Image (cartoon, rainbow, N blue to C red; front, top):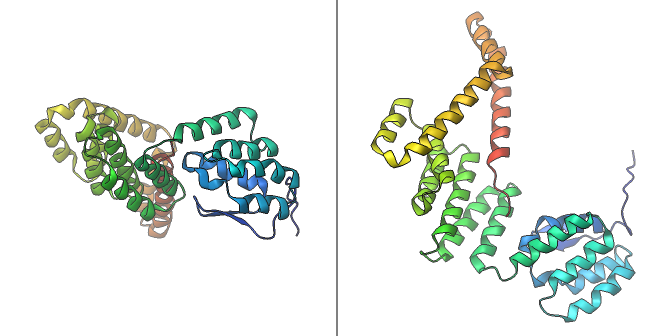
Length: 280
């Protein structure tokens, strides 16, 4: 069964590779979507003569190619180059185009380590977790020791990646490093929440008692746990637990295992959705 694909110009037989994000695109709509998605990563390398040729010859957008050629001779003009593409295609709304321009302009002049951090966050968002962790390690190696705020942000991102893989011991270590740098509330809460996943309630309580500086963060974590437990008892999760207990009492092991596998998959997906980092 054939598909109808609507696009400005035509779909290219040969894709264009956006090297910054290692993505191949076949239409101007895919190009616009990708440029918006990685706006903070873009630099002058996007003013690529091959891109202009590709738009004209492969996509049949000769008018757009003509509009872009004058920008190839202007250094550090990649923001305007990209905006010519976005405005011509009108793939995004004018309001969204303004946001993309702002993102690109704010990223101009970013220190090299902030560019590296943006790339690591993008890799994480694409599911390339190992690559993202390596890139984050590179950021930490490049950052001056006095850049405490940025170093804390990097350690938070590393913690979120480990938490998304259920490596809570490593996650708690990363969050602790982040908290030690800035003593911010978010890092403190994340640290204690991850620590609770690998310790008993008694051990966790004893630890809080020995570290009164973490008491306020611990209170917020406890409140979050209590709210989650209440929602669980009142909602579908509570019914699922009761069903599991019934299967266990009746010895229906296959049905119990199927239900456990289902809920584990749902919880894993939900946790990753809420813990993967975003760019910005």
